[in-house]
Length: 340
Image 1 (cartoon, helix red, strand yellow):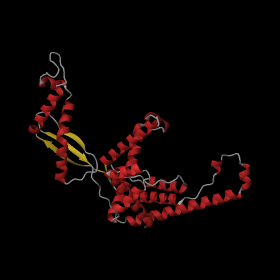
Image 2 (cartoon, helix red, strand yellow):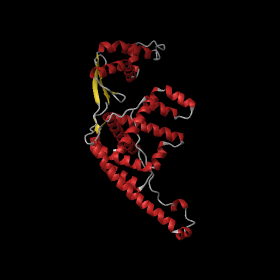
Image 3 (tube, one colour):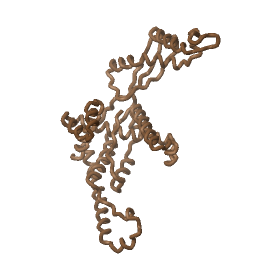
Image 4 (tube, one colour):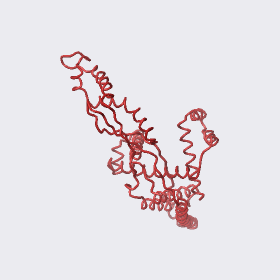
């Protein structure tokens, strides 16, 4: 599932101002969610029945009813005792994969999410119908995006310059005010530390935050609902795992932040939406501007992995190399946008 983290920046007034602008500019979530794609899969009962009977027979082998030896219960009686949902799911597990792939091929669909299957009709002795739901890559409007980027950069640069000027003035004042420093010698030194002007990396991060916020606001990329849902679920799983490693329960985490589970889920869904919007924008820009990655660039990145065993493993890992290529492309797009 796609997942792009935006460049981070230290908490500074300039950066915070950019974040406030981004928050104020966020479009209505409903306007940012696209419909999923889907098609209906149909199975005739003639095709379902032999598989249904085979699954029923197999499950009945572990069933023991009063008056019958284990595995010897008549199928008509076993069917009444067994979990009907388990039987149906077992049948679908065998039928759906091939039928789903055939439906994708027929409709020329290119999913970028895992599918969800919704039952329409699963009655015994009748044909079965299941709706396959999935997400495809959304179409991104890039009309006039370069001007949007330049406008966002100009505004953010003014905020950065203002902040740096104030920070430098504060820093200079601290140097000259030696008597005040001596008088407050017992005060926490960290609390006295003058605000520092933004480093070049912090400035670039702040610029990119402003660019992303403006692009999302103006280009209004829509993300399929299912992709947001699955990305959010993955983020929650990742958080749960991290908390477990720290011996913190989800309940304690929520309590410390005065959040309910629903509120946490909503926050993560909103974050997932924003991350996906940015990722699709970056990918669309890369495609339009023909920003690509060479095999040499991938090799050079791999060579920077210090641990020899890890480097050798990564060279053989096709999935990692796909991830690495995507990462390099995004870095190139970000540099391209900063240079506009």
